[in-house]
Length: 158
Image (cartoon, rainbow, N blue to C red):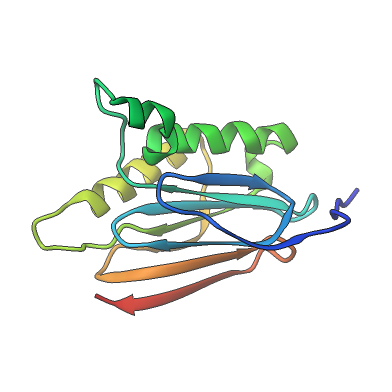
């Protein structure tokens, strides 16, 4: 059975350290630099979401701000997304995307570390991203259309 919400809000903007999963919006959008975003969409249930994480892992002694906003880190953001997805269907039924991780400066390796963490997590979960646009020297705007599963990537020179 296909699920379509009765009324949909137009678009949700997801900011760094935030995540969303559900079916209340027509689209979800985020802007990425060295941060990474993982998207998920279910073609039959018409639900989807994305997480926008800043760093790969929670620090050993997180500050109060970090504890209140766990989606800043890949390890907790991906865990929260996984839980939300499994509430609807098994992970293997979703179309996944992986975006961002730009090299903002030549000295910073945060983008690469974020990409590596997300790829390792997907391999461990035995899932594969069908849409991938990572690395290089671009900032990106990612838009996931929840009704169709379409993903738009706009690249901007840095």
